[in-house]
Image (tube, rainbow, N blue to C red; front, top):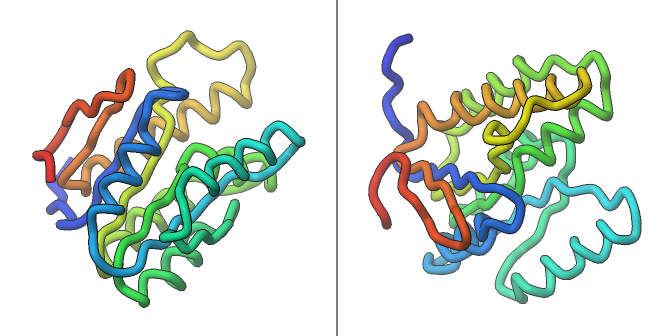
Length: 181
């Protein structure tokens, strides 16, 4: 594999459920001047998820412009990067889930390649949040194993081009690649 030059203002934040990854990523962006766009990929499949989405929105406060885009992540990034400022995507694994569930014939490898190709062209800071799912047991069904494998490949591809990769554990950032800002 050839070395890929890092993208200066790209950070990948990984962590497990309730690890503090979103709060950490929001802190990275909140410290910046200029517009802040939060690209939310979650879908409200039930009332509990709708409540979670509403709580996240409330917790972020009024200083964020929220864009809900569960499927066309590249389109949302292109559309909102032009304004300058910073983009925060939360989260890649929800986007991946949505792609897998929306189209059983989805070409996830092509979707990943398109995202990785787009990231170097975006102005401003981009912070990507994702769930690290490779630390658990082997899933018991084909769809879950497919998801885990695609998530692992997606994370590896983005980590290869990001100068900063942060793993959050119990609310604490662990810099896997790069330095603190």
